Image 1 (cartoon, rainbow, N blue to C red):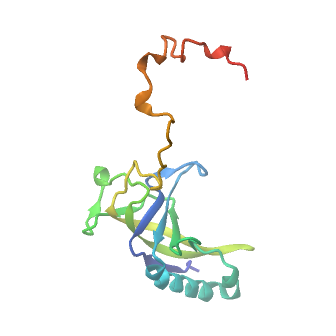
Image 2: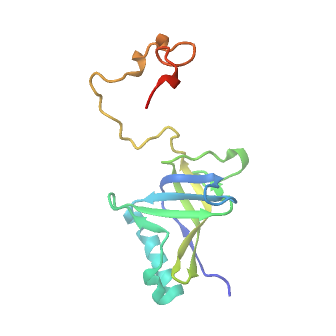
Image 3: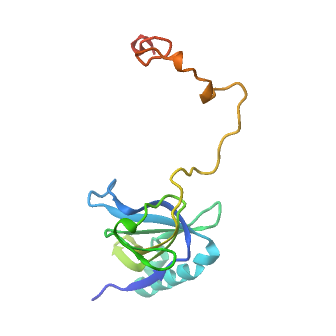
Length: 186
């Protein structure tokens, strides 16, 4: 029997931890392509409803306790989808043209993307749910490699200022004020 699939295509959202142009090998030596995609709740509702109905049709009562490939951010209320694949996804630009080879850009956190693929069911007894299998990515914006969380710090009066460090503070050994680092007692 063929495994049931539910095709999907998300609305655009912000990528979080995108590993899409090269595989993440931290927990899997073969590598996994994955990303989280943050989508406003009202724009994610249709997909969520479809996935829940799909799970109910395929799993029956087990759907009530099934793990889902999305969660609601408790602070913002946005939906965070988690998509992954063992295979490099296909890439498209914002006009819908396919990207290949060196035309595929490096993507960073905050990139604006749409994702596509299939939802499938897994059932390993008490570990059961729906997987969000990724097969294609539409790149709308690349994201910023220098982006932080947007929250900086306020100035502190009388503290360290990078421009105030004099170049002659270090001697030839690279230690501050000519003291060897081995002279420090902790």
